[in-house]
Amino acid sequence: MQKLGAAKISMFVNIGLLASKIVVAFITGSIGLYAESAHSFFDLVASVLAYLGIRKAEQPEDHSHHFGHEKFENLSSLLQALLITGTAFVVLFEAYQKISGPGEVEFSEAGIILMLISIPVTYFTSRYLGDIAKKEGSSALEADSAHFTTDVISSVAVLLGLILVKLGYVFGDPLGAIVVGLVMLYISIELLLKSFWVFMDFSPEKDKMAKIVHVLDSEKGITRYHKLRARIAGSRILVDVHIHVPHKTSVVDGHKIAHDIETRIMREVPEVKEVSVHVEPD
View 1 (tube, helix red, strand yellow):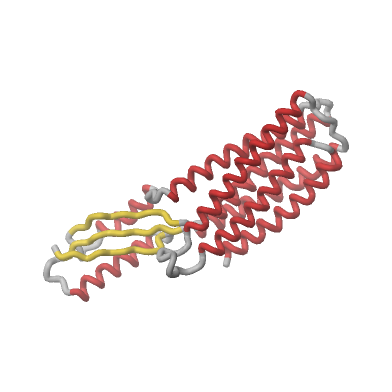
View 2: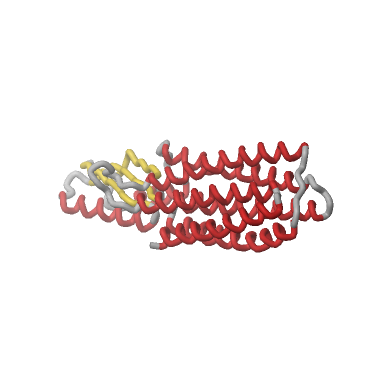
């Protein structure tokens, strides 16, 4: 499965980035690199959560989850956002303390080289995860992609900070760490809001609802419809609608019309997992 494969790649990339950043942070003593190491550690935890969330979400309906396990992806995304938030506050606190008394950074060249390597790696990983998330409608991979996006931005900040240190400006290192913390905080708030919307059973975006309405409006076999409802469940959408057919319509024909509506809605909006059509005589 493509989603699980992408989640595995994310874990392996994070393991490599974490190991390299810890080693170079220890060598240089850079608070910016220590912040990046903490960032990558929680990115790895988030990747594991994304993998577990996707794996659980793919399980079929059972006696305790009649509508499937789709929301486990959103739970994974929520936990990832909370991890980023906690890490951001720790990084900001440490950076604030270092601003008043910046520590000495040794062998800043090693940190600069590492950042020059990690930036393209994290960028292309973020792009890959983002593409798969968009294609598969995966909120867990979307959150994971956001982690790598923050990594790109924060790595650039750390790189600039280390360059400033190399030029003799010691405040560059904690300044880079502060940028890392702020970027992480911004991304985490966005992810938290998205997860909140899903758990509150918000309806899909207007363009998706418009496509569903268009299918119903263009169906000639019905006289009218009402109680159209749709909600997001993980990476899928659940739709419920009541349709009216002419009074003399047979049960067989009514079923055929309902089935046709279900098929067309799921074709027009691939994210729709289930359509419940209630047939009523007019």
